Length: 119
Image 1 (spheres, helix red, strand yellow):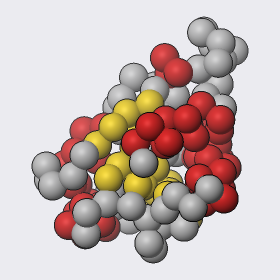
Image 2 (cartoon, rainbow, N blue to C red; image 1 turned 90 degrees about the vertical axis):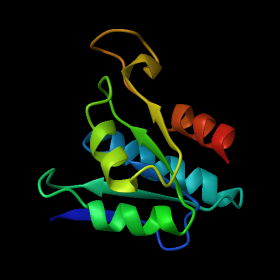
Image 3 (cartoon, rainbow, N blue to C red; image 1 turned 90 degrees about the horizontal axis):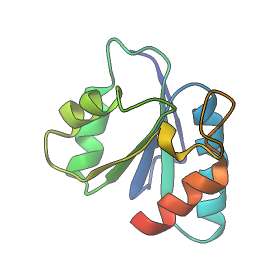
């Protein structure tokens, strides 16, 4: 299993993301950390095998999760399986693009706003 973590060691909220959105999440983590929020990120590099054990461990420590992906939630099921109903899993998807349609992106500021709601 291949995945990358960023500021995840003491995180109370973990952002789960891949692709370009993972770079946006990393910036949102930096924004949150600058305000004292314990936020980290997990970026799956390969989707199989998925890092279920790591998610299960973080959930058992009281960590919550925010899945951020530029799609309609295909990653959600894997995260739900990983946390085994032991933690809150929220979602921010393609409907949060700054411009609707193919030219839109999910910006770090949008992610950070959602993080502040969940913190």
